Image (cartoon, rainbow, N blue to C red; front, side):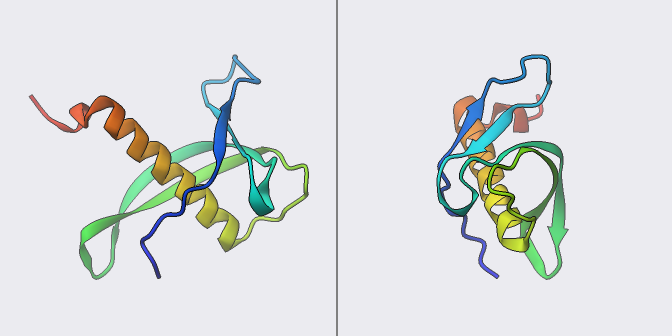
Length: 101
């Protein structure tokens, strides 16, 4: 299994300002138009890999215009988006929240 993430074109949507979760829309490919939110996110140990962590996450689909069914491929796309969001946020805050004072 590859640890490489793929860049997926997505955007944050401001449809429901009352929600505490950001809605994400996929803008291209097989899942174009799919809107979803991430729920719980948990880092987990990867058996046999001392250097890397895995991610477990939940998600809620808020709009599915192409009626795509959940599949391992779709979950991988959502995971790639999650990793990209996390990497972007780490760069933005320069990893400061990871350091203990």
